[in-house]
Image (cartoon, rainbow, N blue to C red; front, top):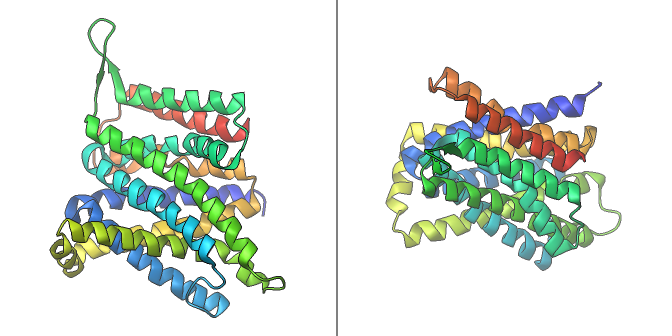
Length: 311
């Protein structure tokens, strides 16, 4: 089927749009910490069942110490730090602007790859980062009196959104390092299915470490009562189940499938369209007004992501 990878990539972007929409609702209802504990716990169960059905073991088989170390670090950076910032920024600035600031993740991954892996950062990558940052700036800043700028959004929400983009970008590079160690740990002659499922096993390791990290933080904040309340609340569990389904389950699985059938740059660019797709529920469901400035900012930021991958 022609353009199968591109079609799957668009489905991924829609899936992550649904995740962002319900993550906003779940975070407002139960708090970002509780939401992430429940989400990563459910994701661990789902991925364990998936591995059991496909490779016969409900855990990441052959994962060695180095694999757990690097994937654990990626979970702490990407999930505990990044997702904590992301889910909290939804509370302050909403999923639309939260996802817009997440377009910082690709350039942050480029910088982290340059520092940790020695990957070259070309002038085209620098140009793409500048365009992306310009789009974000257009959307969150408005012209005030004279030549001054004023921030349209709460500063705390913007900083949390930036933290989310940085966490996801750096976490992605740490995940890449962890998966390289994992691939080296798999013995020669292992079944092809086992090799194909390495990304899912890696995601399970990250979900386990991330879930433990959030649980420890929740305990330190004396929020276990909130966790019990959320588990007993059918509406909260509905939101968390949807986040888990469209995030680690459908979203991650289809994103891995997309890069098998399409150029990785094209697939990544299409999957980065979530800030555009999030406009639909914002307008149709939340009845929010989208200003021309915000639309221009969205377009510029997506162009920046496209340049980053395609040049």
